[in-house]
Image 1 (cartoon, rainbow, N blue to C red):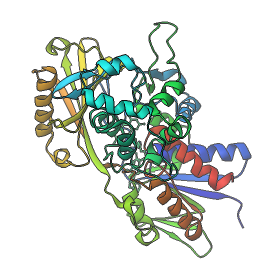
Image 2 (tube, rainbow, N blue to C red):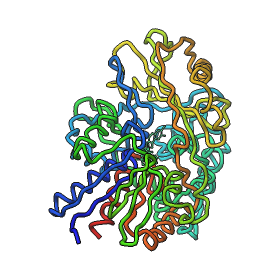
Image 3 (cartoon, helix red, strand yellow):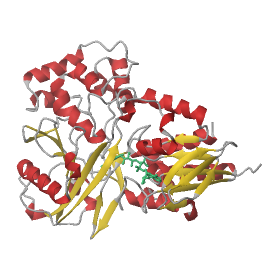
Image 4 (cartoon, rainbow, N blue to C red):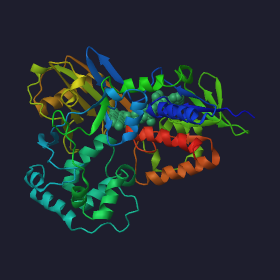
Length: 468
Ligand code: FAD
């Protein structure tokens, strides 16, 4: 029997391409004869990563950066030769919209948890009662059943009260998950807070003790940003990643229809065009609803994981500097759910990421689409733009029109990690281990939605196939 193993990777987003890179790395390190093929349905690689580069602008349709402290992504960026292109964000005040006014997020608030007394005590964002209720965190006992997963909302409401959750924590977190905070799994999204409560009881005291001092740039003496991106946009990373593997190992414009296990334990991947590819292992990185269809719905335990992913759209707009009559001294704002706006957040892109914008221009990027209100995402570009401009006029007084704009819809793009997510994924993987032992599930639906989480998920999939 041949020693050569072939791995088929379904999906050419960041997870699929990272998986290809790690399979190749393993083959090189061990000298084992392993080949692989990435199969991507669209004609473009990158999945949700999609950078538009035109006339000196670098605009992202989907993700724009990643959390620097999750170093697995930086290592991969360096591995593909782009270490020198890494750029961190300019820091500055972020704001929150409440009662149609922009309030600075109180200094020292970490994910909304106050760690400094004065900025929290003096902010007009919360009522006196709201502040007093948050202070109860200092004396409330810790949860007895800390191992049991609960919602992020439930956890923070108990410790800090509804006001701090609704006006600060919810808008900050739903920017990342576009989900319902009262259904979002604490264990799968912010396990560090479970640990903080376990160790320090009070979140305020715990965060105060554990927050690392923010590094300052040796040149500008300004605080270093917590996020990283690439000078040429995130698509430049996708390009470098795809060039790091042999060209013939990537097939674009080929859609997978089904995967079947053969009697001899190998797998047949059937394409929409009627062709079939045989492999010893399959790493599946397609969106969850696609994966279910490809592998057979009956394998998937019934459960909450069937909650529809949320659709969002981003609107990137370029204005002439003199047309934006607003002091953009900061990085942008997020919006509390109670506000009657179409947008959910706005990044002052040219300020936060100066390399993206030519001099004399201002780029603003707004998000629309909430878990409980998806209709707007389906509207035409023109309708979405008008709604966004209407909001910007009310909030920032911007009443000029952009020189150009891009509306980017990401349909069913944000997997919803509901309470019990971790247990469900564990159960799912156990079923696969028994029924389809050569298949691995990787990517945003399982191990975290952030780009570094996807890279890590790809790495774990390859390790569990070959290294364990
Ligand atoms: P995908 O990128 O979805 O890739 C899956 C691939 O599978 C796609 O290319 C698709 O075409 C392909 N495919 C589908 N069906 C088939 C088929 N039948 N056959 C073959 N191929 C198929 N994360 C961050 O860290 N920072 C951010 O700033 C950030 N911002 C975001 C903003 C938005 C608007 C969105 C939607 C997400 C954001 N995220 C961010 C999350 C992050 O972008 C995603 O979690 C990540 O890109 C998912 O990568 P993936 O490879 O797992 O999946």
